[in-house]
Structures are given as C-alpha cells and as structure tokens.
Amino acid sequence: MNHNITTNFIQQHTLLTNLATEPVTTVEKYILRALSLVGSYINAQQFYDEGTDAFTFPEPLQNAVLYIVEVLYIDKGMFAGANSIQSEKIGDYAYSKKQDTRVMPLDLPANIIALLDPYRSRAGNIAIDVGWYDREYEI
Image 1 (tube, rainbow, N blue to C red):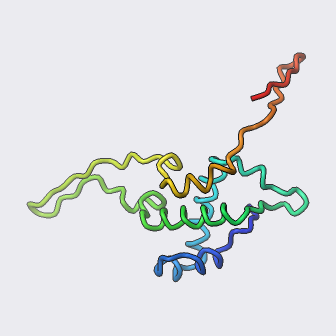
Image 2: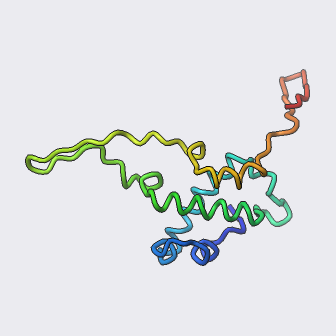
Image 3: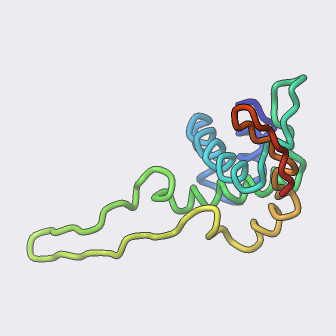
C-alpha cells in the first residue's frame, strides 16, 4: 500500500518519546494498522489516485493516523497482544483480569473521530449485477 504517511512524519510529530525512537519497521506496522482502521471507517478509496497508485491523505487525516498510531502504541495489547494475559499465578499469588472488549474504531477518542467524520463517505451508487437483471441503487 503506497501512501503519504511516512515513519519520518510519525516520528517527527509524535509527542511520545519512545515511539519516536522505535525502529522504522515497528512504526510501519503501527501505521499500517492505523491506516486499516481509518480506511475502513472513512472509505479511503476516495483518496486513491490510479495515476500514482497511491493514497494521498490530507493533513487532518494524517494527524488522525498519527493519533491512532499513538493510541495503538500506548496500548500495545490492541496491536501485538502484549496485554492478552487473562490470569497468572506466581507461587501463592494469583490474579485474573477481565477481557478487553474494545472494538476499534468505534472506541476511538472523540478528538480522533472528529477528525475522521468530515471525510467519512458512503458509496454513492452501487451497481448490482444479478445475472440478466441490472439495477443501480442509490444509498
């Protein structure tokens, strides 16, 4: 996936010191996860340019991706399963924790949703091919 959100952009603009020093390959994984979330929420196809074979996101969406990368980085369990331990026992000590039930992107912070909503689009027309009968539906 070609796009205009680079690891350099993330590392230069993040407020998280540790994220700014992560290896490029690690940051790229966070970017791809964030782009997946953003893309499914706003229908990213509207930013795809066939001529360049790349997605070109405007600045507010670049910032939204940056914030989502930071959210994913802070809560690594959402990305890498780091917080997936449900119970643990060490000697006589044992504990259990409830399962994390958050579902992205619905549980994104309001400031991120506010950045994404103006770009959210629904398909305008859907062409449905049912064998011999074609009809166009407007949503």
